Length: 132
Ligand code: HEM
Image (cartoon, protein in one colour):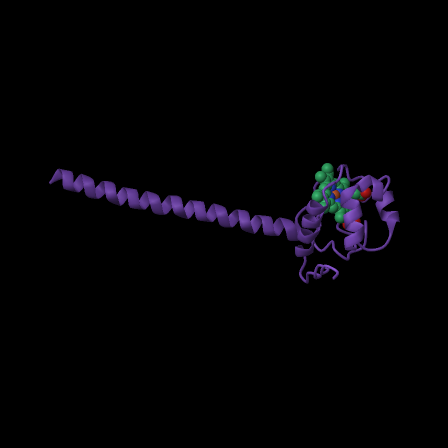
């Protein structure tokens, strides 16, 4: 009899523990998702500026960021071509930029980064299709 009661208590405790652990894990997961979304949309500028909506946006303007004189003077908007050149060699494309980043030498990796930057938008500009 006491073994039965003990067993029942153990099983109930295990179920309650399982539900609690699952709930906490799920809430943690949701919190991370929501926080990273907020971070991307309105997130604070850290070492560099927040890049939401960067494709097609003016270079070195707005974003509540204190851009270098070099980037402010560059002019024009961030086309895929210019992003490609900047990411390949920030200091090569904008001599005097404050972006302390060596750049990404591999073409396919830059293509991935640019494709990702396209997604950071309310109205993503389609990526160019391969020329035939
Ligand atoms: C693949 C990674 C990166 C990408 C795609 C990227 C992209 C960009 C772009 C497009 C801008 C210009 C923003 C604008 O004109 O509004 C910028 C600026 C900047 N980024 Fe990056 N960045 C990267 C990595 C980094 C890293 C690792 C750092 C810091 C160590 C950094 C620091 C900065 C700073 C300080 C600026 C302002 C530059 C200036 O005022 O001259 N970035 N970044």
